Length: 312
Ligand code: AGV
Ligand code: CA
Figure 1 (cartoon, protein in one colour):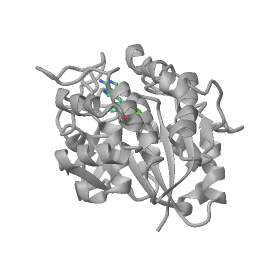
Figure 2 (tube, protein in one colour):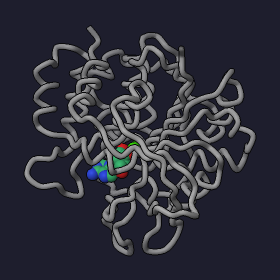
Figure 3 (spheres, rainbow, N blue to C red):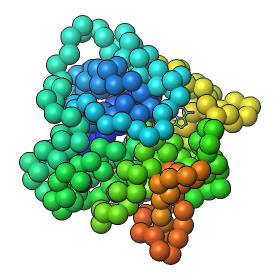
Figure 4 (cartoon, rainbow, N blue to C red):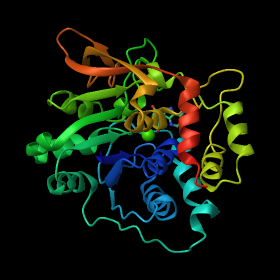
């Protein structure tokens, strides 16, 4: 059966690869894409998205909407630059023109419009901050009924998150930290949430053997795209640093097509929306239920990603 999926991403390397992968899933009807300028700059991220749809969308027509949302805590500029590199890949620019349409409304409104007009419910895949969803819910509470569930790359219940910033205690994950109030707004809704948190994404760092595998199969256009994208970001070699790249969003996206790769359990949690722990998700009996993705079969995951990417 076809699954309706709406993607909202923030233009990182693994965000753009996630879009590419969704377009390869036979049972996914991608109803729209929103791009939010959190871990990216908006213009190259929106262009790159449309070019990926053109090149790798198998003729599907998917509208891309640019967000006008603003965050609370800014991402480092170095990370935000990645969208420029992907957008400039010769592989995406051979044609010299863009066909995939840009929506005429900002992405939170595009989300509302798309959910309302799509028959049946839609699965939301958010692999950046939740700002556009929070704004959409404020503006159109009726859309909750059209949402099958939300799969979100965000949060962690580990002691150490991945935010290393002044005036913060390090307990948060970045997508939650960028706009903690938005996460809280979504927590306050009754949407079913699958949380692909750092517990599981920490198990899929970018490593040299993975890069080598993709390099050795670069004759295939889809695998070459993976290889080119993951050449732009630092792998885990000796020590993990603040810049070490994981396949955070790609893991999140693969759970749409292959739920068997991960293990989930239900927990109750709250979100801190201010102070030194802002963006922290914390286990609490007073919190709301989320389905925490806490483990992944690493080898099977990379095999699935590679398999899905093969064009020939
Ligand atoms: O916290 C993970 C989120 C994911 O959605 N992003 C990157 C993924 O797209 C922020 C982030 C955390 N650490 C990073 C990030 C790093 N070292 N480089 C780039 N982005
Ligand atoms: Ca992201």
